[in-house]
Length: 168
Image (cartoon, rainbow, N blue to C red; front, side, top):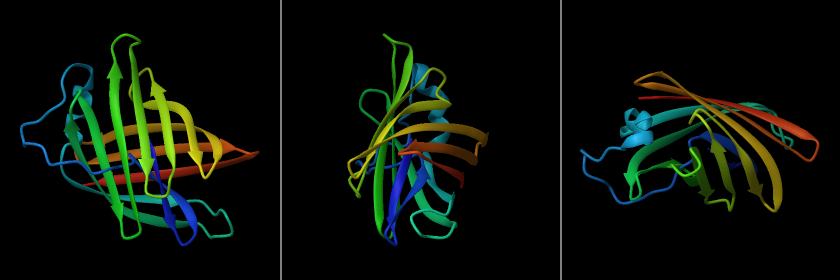
């Protein structure tokens, strides 16, 4: 459940990934096991991610805009955008396995898939430029207008931690 921004030659994680889709009616809401995420719908979220020093670049903050909508299949879709990046995430629930899932892709060619038992902590894998990494992402609702995202990416003997806050 993250997005990698291709900024200044580096990849930056941003919470909740994102891809665009046609606008939905204001009364479109998630049902059943997905109702937990209805508070995310509506106006844009402004997100800031603390990016660690990596790939020869200093630690810094990255800023993006994030929007959410409901797409067919009772699935939450988000779209993240910045001046040099675009990404999409899809969040759903599989009642046969009692598992929440996420599928992500971005304009830099990165993709991720992960699953969760509680829709809060997801584990899975990400493919970044042909390199596969393990990902653990934790989402927390602070209030109706604030969410946080903590992600640990590990692979190739390295580990990077990204912390994000989104508000509206």
